[in-house]
Image 1: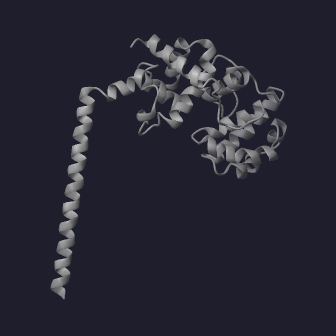
Image 2: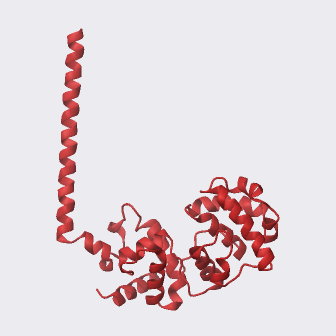
Image 3: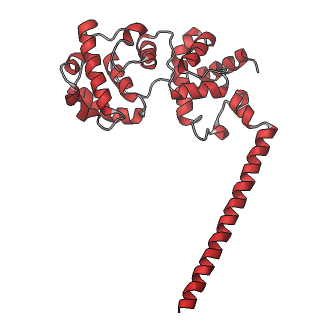
Length: 253
């Protein structure tokens, strides 16, 4: 299948079936989303949504967060990954917003990346979600799913994936395509054992095609047979061990 066809099928399916896909992080304004995305690095959205209500109650706006130091922020985020670093990032981010950007979250991706704790992925999320910019953030889900489906070719870095997606996706779909890929990767095309049996994209998915070639199927069957033999062998050895142990006990008696 040609790359252009694969992209067309991808956009057509999700435009029809997930036309309103959006982030699962809870927020009410740009400040809250920025904080949530910074906290979400290497952590689940579910965990972040558990943490942020109390955090936002204590620090309801940029000014309140900027007036705090990392030690004051830490207790509210101690259950997320890397809480010490993230507390420092949040404190530094808020202070820079107040000092440099008049307390407002900037819309420019380059300006966003100047903020502590904000890398290219986070900047792209804010730019696309808050300011509807034609940008696509690449996290582990986007990276994995784009490569598996075949939207990207030999893309070994997040930036390479981003460039190929931006080049081939219609500009008006870039922001939502980020959510399509994340949600698909989070619930169906999972990292260890993708749920191909329920995936609606298998008919144009490159990964599925590769896994279901004659060679791949033969290899999988051979692995299954080996596993079955190993299980039988283990059971036989366990039975022998039990019998020997029983004989030893009988002998002692």
